[in-house]
Every structure is written in structure tokens, then in C-alpha cells.
Amino acid sequence: LKDAIQAFTAQQIVTACYVQGNADQCVNISHNPDGSIFIVNQTFQNISKAAVAGVDIEAGYTHGIHWFGGSESLTGRLFASHLQTNSTTSSTGVKTEMAGDVGTLSLPDWKLPAFLQYANGPFTTFVEGRFINGGKLSATYNLNGNWDIANNHVPSVTYYDMRMAYDITIGSSTLQLY
Image 1 (cartoon, rainbow, N blue to C red):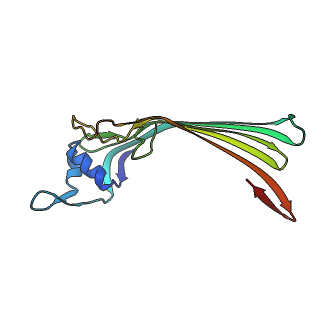
Image 2: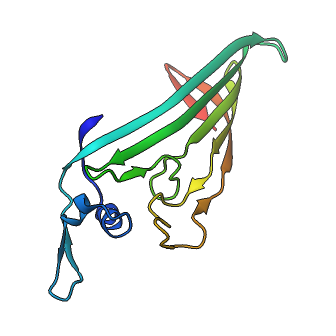
Image 3: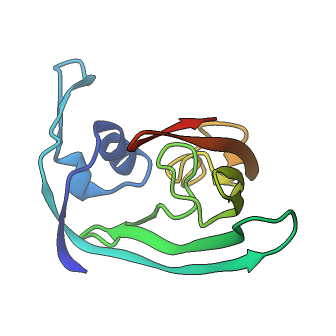
């Protein structure tokens, strides 16, 4: 996307100016007479270029089964999301890549949620796993030889959830116990 319009946070503007040397962002910072920051202008800005690219994949399967009798089914679903790039480039050519920034922006390069559900009449059980790839705590830390923090890495994590439910019909309504 060329000639994009975007609003940056005050911290993104200050980091872009002082750490990345992005003159486009330095003009948005006003100083007190002693040189300290007075205000950061966070208006929408024209940026030279913004790029976002990635791939999402989804697969699902449902099948009737005969394990315990009754109206049984087994359903599985997998989602995969790969964020290849999420960057902005200023008019002075300073590129900021945010893909893989999992600490401040929650933009991991890989996310993989999947679930499996068994249903038999009013009874269902559901198991889910969610993988989130590790990455940088912040894409704007430790740039140009400036060390903000000793460890700018967030490890991968996997979460698991499980739910069981039973539906009870009461007249024309359904009460679900879980």
C-alpha cells in the first residue's frame, strides 16, 4: 500500500525518532525549554508505504461415528495463520517490521488453534489447543546498537482448554449444563 495513512502511538513516535532516527517522526515531538518532551502529536500521518502479507489456512472435518450408540459425531478443525510481514516505511526510507512482535502488539508470525469435539445427543465434549509462536517482546527494542532490555525474546506458548456440556430440554427452551 503506497501513500498510507496511519496513527502511531506516542511511544512508537518517540522510538522511531530517537532510536530509528526517523526524521518524519521527530517533527511530531515538541520539547520544553530544558529539552525534555513536552507533547507528542499523535494525529493521522501520511506514511510512504505499509505492507501486510500472510497466509491463513483452515481445515475442518465432521463424521458420524458409532462408538457408544446414539446420534454421535466427531468434529475436528484446524486453523493456521502465518503473518509474513506487517511493516511501515517512512518517506525517509526507515522500515519498521512488526510481524513477530508478540509482546506489545500481539502479532506472532504463527498462530495454530485446533479443536476436536465429540457429540452424542445432548452430551458434547470439546478439547482445544492454541499454539502461539514466540518472537520479539518489541520490534522497536535493541535497534541500532541501543540496548533497551537484555532479553527481547518471548517464548512460544501452547494453551489447552476442555469443556463438557449437557443439554436439558425444558418446554420449548434448552438449558445447558457445563
